[in-house]
Length: 486
Ligand SMILES: Nc1ncnc2c1ncn2[C@@H]1O[C@H](COP(=O)(O)OP(=O)(O)OP(=O)(O)O)[C@@H](O)[C@H]1O
Ligand SMILES: [Mg+2]
Image (cartoon, rainbow, N blue to C red; front, top):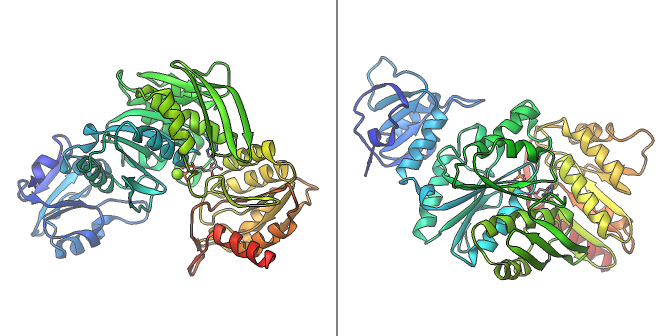
């Protein structure tokens, strides 16, 4: 049994009322999840202040309330602790509640605008041959084939630490996790003892949350500043921001990329419709492999994961074997149909990702590149014209459609995108119905073409103002191709 006073750090409480030595059965930030004996950490969020739900938490049996607000003057049935920073307290208390599980795991954090999901999956696959490895990210939290779904790429601290405790119980030694910039800004990963951090890429995204590119970068840099002298950073040298990351380091580091200066770089590489074959030069000798992952950006993700594994002492043979067996992550440069022409579903939802995707397939397509894409509603609007510019510069034919329109009018989002096309660009159609848009693109495709369906990747839903419907790009491709062949 844990007690409130041991879970609270020495410096975290400003004031309190009630008994600090009360037993705590769990740490919750959602009053609806509070049970008998939980400590309710009332987070003052951007939209809501959790303090409004203290009554509900107490009714559900909370033994304590932690909040940035001072204890109220009226009599209270529970202990109330005022803290300086509610999110820091949530993270610190959750970590202590589960006996600081991250200190008993070797944790690799992967951050960057794009490439986190594939890189984490690759690191997990490369380390798994050495010792059981858990992973956390957009696709959920998993180890040994069991998956806990998550809503966020990097979940809230109580979920993270509870999962780590379970991973330890199951014998995991390593953990690879996606670290979103939001999770860094919101102190979700403050108490995670990272021994490695990987920087994949940096470009404009989430500006609705961070405000400026500088704030967004600052959030990412904070993961690297905290690494100590016995830790490792793994940095993409091709990304101009990589040098900025390196300047912040107090730890050892390895760089990867296509440039001559990179510690880990390809000596030879061949991209094809079947994947990539390459020989990497590394400080530990050559690593020769083939992989089913498609496109140039995936070779960067592979190099990131190989760097991480080499630093951990995994042998070149083991790395090559794991890469050969690696199955592409759902919805990341994922072939949905291969026939006369290739149909690929990809999660690219930023201008940078879209550009990488188009450039990568330009290298392997014999025919035209037909792109189907939209932009999410109620999110960073600044990327719409940038995505449009990338589309008209790199695709031969574009079908502009809906992504997740959320609270916005789908036609208005499409208009924001088409307004971003270069003057005189006419090789596009608009079709707000994503199913019809995919059918349109597949109908236009001829032998040798590649149809890229971007934006939703693994998602199996589409979110509109008034409803969320089942929608899966893969299913739609299969249905449309089926009707065509029938
Ligand atoms: N190393 C990379 N550099 C640039 N673009 C990439 C890279 N890897 C993948 N991409 C592109 O970005 C898309 C998203 O990749 P991925 O899902 O790995 O990103 P993420 O960092 O996990 O994003 P999220 O923040 O949504 O979790 C891919 O579908 C692909 O188009
Ligand atoms: Mg991800």
